[in-house]
Length: 58
Image: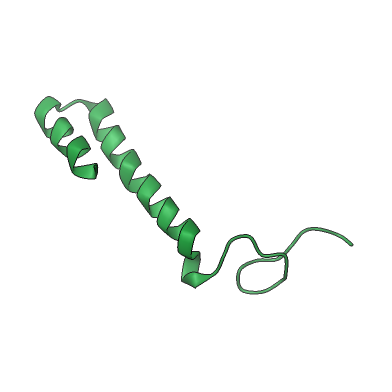
């Protein structure tokens, strides 16, 4: 799908088409980071540690 956006940008040269292409790259990276977590750890940890700390008070 990324290639379609790139091809469209190459044809039109429009900034908006480039931004759509770049947005696809950014979304793909965010999904990749979210699914595997950075260093394979989830962003949603309730315990202190390498993945972050919880701000909840008990």
